[in-house]
Image 1: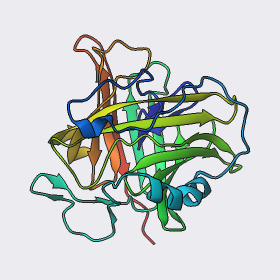
Image 2 (image 1 turned 180 degrees about the vertical axis):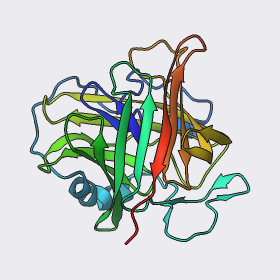
Image 3 (image 1 turned 60 degrees about the vertical axis):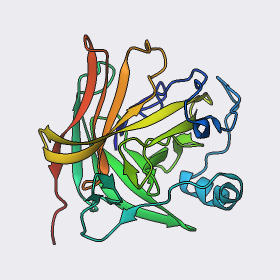
Length: 274
């Protein structure tokens, strides 16, 4: 969960909506070209505000019938190591009450943003991890993540009104996940306040596991290369690092060697006991 930079919403959960909006290029692997077409749209009449959890549950049966087979969910509650022989087999859901704080150097974002893990919510056969903003944003915001692949499904405000929803969601990760894995993802985001729709996609490449030394501690994290954010030169490379132990994205970076935007996990405050 890092802040996703979008024109609609700036939050601490991973630069989600700032993906490449250009047409996906041809991939060497033929499997990567099997992507459903999405009609590009810049604006759209506002739809009724719906809960992202309900949206997903209503579509799950249809998606399973029409979509190609994909690697399945990996949220675990056991204490076994999530990393085996270079493969992230699963991730641990953050304990409810754990506070995560990120620091970033992007001028349009608050320098420090904090979220607290707010437990999980179930609907049908889907389970979602929920986070609540507690510092840095101008309003209380809830973020919902699909535990199947930690895809952001949507943001809602304190009144439970939709702010943004992702359908399809940006698929940054697939579990189990190992170095060399590659897939095409496409996403579509709606800002429910303006009615504007943004969409994009590209090729995701898993680089491998790295041992990161961050202000919050030392973590084993999988480095993943994402499409270049829209409006930036293709020389700007976009990476994220996912910690299966913490169940969140612990670092995000966009740069070209001369200028770099980064967001890193600064602090983890364990849930209060008792």
